Image (cartoon, rainbow, N blue to C red; front, side, top):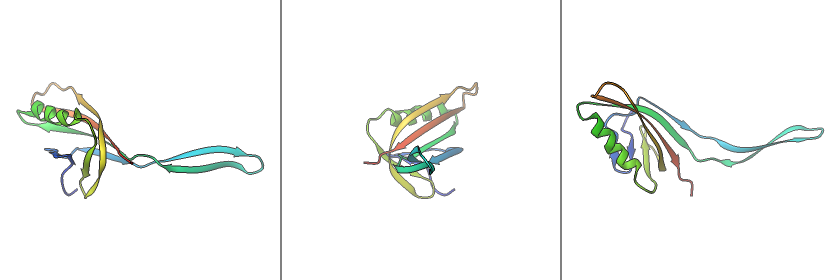
Length: 116
């Protein structure tokens, strides 16, 4: 995986160890007599990027709160995923996962694409 994860002007110190990009379409299902199940594609839903990572070093908690400061900002920003995919997104979830190791902080995150 080439490149760094970026959100607005925040560069992730370490790329997330796992992430997924979810693309989905909204559909409507109904039953038509003598024809069976009918599926209608109504359009594309906003892309969702979820993942988890770990921050390391004596300042791991400071790194987490630096990331949190971007989570707490209002408004969407440019999200760039390694490999060059970039789109406007809102940072909608950030979760710290407690560990007993003071030099490592695990976290989970979620971004949702802005489609307008």
